[in-house]
Amino acid sequence: MTNEQANRVANALIAAAAVGVTVVVMRSPTLRRLAWRLAVTAVTGALPAWLGREVRQGWVESGQRGI
Image (cartoon, rainbow, N blue to C red):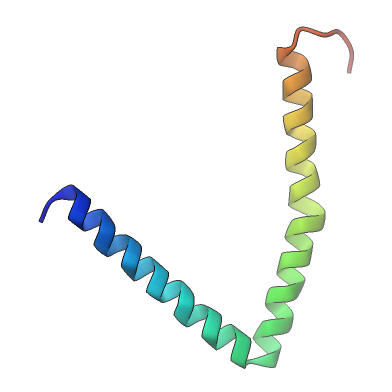
């Protein structure tokens, strides 16, 4: 088995696992609510923090003074 074939098989297995997990989560109301809460937390917490770091890094790399 070549490296390219191994990557394809691994990608197919990961995709199948993701579809399976999605089906299980969507069928269970408790897991669906938990997934929704985690998604909201990620969007409202991690995304703004990441964006702030990127803006700050861009500012510093541009050579501007401040902050």
